[in-house]
Length: 362
Ligand SMILES: Nc1nc2c(c(=O)[nH]1)N[C@H]1C(S)=C(S)[C@@H](COP(=O)(O)O)O[C@H]1N2
Ligand SMILES: [Mo]
Image 1: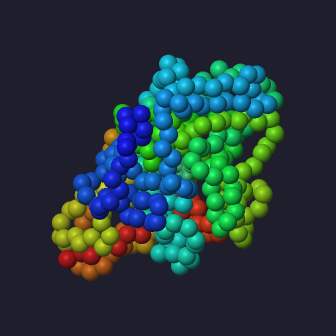
Image 2: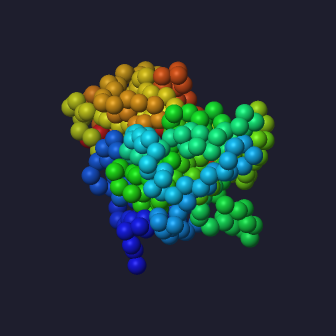
Image 3: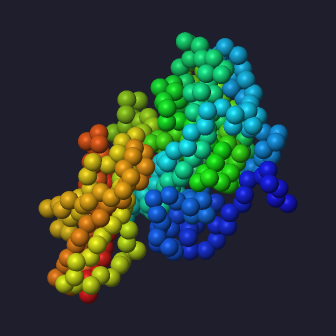
């Protein structure tokens, strides 16, 4: 039976999700339009194993390792008594858009065939990771932190890879942006999203945002985990030790139209969608209906913050009936622009290319 101190279990049936085995993708067009905040009931879920049922009263977070002066163990109440912050930030799976490698570039890559719905933006409440690390006292010799989850050891093909964990370099770990969150859109974290507390590492690959956080080891040497070596690394032709590490997410965009939408001719249509970028805001969004020969400038509307989604709008009129392809291209405030093609890598990470959207004009 579910008690108040357990994470809420949300219903994942219905048209709000596209199901991929144990993972669920937000269906952008499965119901009411999604606003800037993704409701918890619609937020994508990516779990390596069954979500654990943790009890908030006995839960503790330990911070330990050679890189700290004193190991600490904090209860949820103790964490909540520290300086709280509430921020809007997106979390996005590294493989978001993987399906598009096949749809647009003809190469099917293994893994969950996500469309573009493995992203969500929530209002997270928690404490800064750096404030928690400061309580333990960081030594000068610290080089990285290794947060791990309290979910079961991840077993794949008979091999036990241990707890889900991934090294986080010190400069990111100590940035103002990284938090240990216990609330998502003003609700306690649902069970699927890491109850009672998770890391939120904005702008970075989703795997960095360790859920059901239980333990943070502060390390004085670079230690790897399978989640930055075997997976969540760019591998294959063209990648070597110098360019295969994954951290920051690229700039991306989507158009808010159902697949194969039908649109009227001889009428101005207000197209809209979202653009987002890891650790940057959006500088501009452009739309093309001639395969990228010419681009029209979209308007950016409302909030535009780094590692968040920004709304864009574009008036489009078409007088030629038949099938058309709309291309949307975003550029972030660091000057990164979506390329025509994404770099093929063996696990299909970081699909950041311009997305082609077919519409029929009647
Ligand atoms: N402990 C733990 N943390 C985890 C995972 C997991 O399986 N176990 N999945 C990661 C991955 S791959 C992603 S994309 C995000 C998904 O977060 P969400 O399910 O809240 O959307 O959590 C990350 N943190
Ligand atoms: Mo992910």
